[in-house]
Image 1 (cartoon, rainbow, N blue to C red):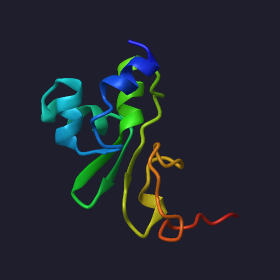
Image 2: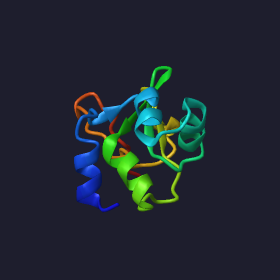
Image 3: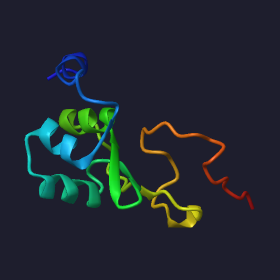
Length: 103
């Protein structure tokens, strides 16, 4: 599967997937999808009790382009709770995103 082929195949899915949508997209159980996210194999952001996964991250996982860096972020006021510095492919409102302190 090529990148353009994958984009056309998953065109009907939203840009920010829920765990249920990710599982359906990949043809796996929600339990396995959750494990892939917790292990950092698919990058995601945790908002409250739910995960949001950028569709591009699911496609990267399918194509084997996903980095090995674990990246699960929580929507909290404390950026120290984040497990990586980037935003995992998700688009966020920068005014609501906590600023990092530079030392």
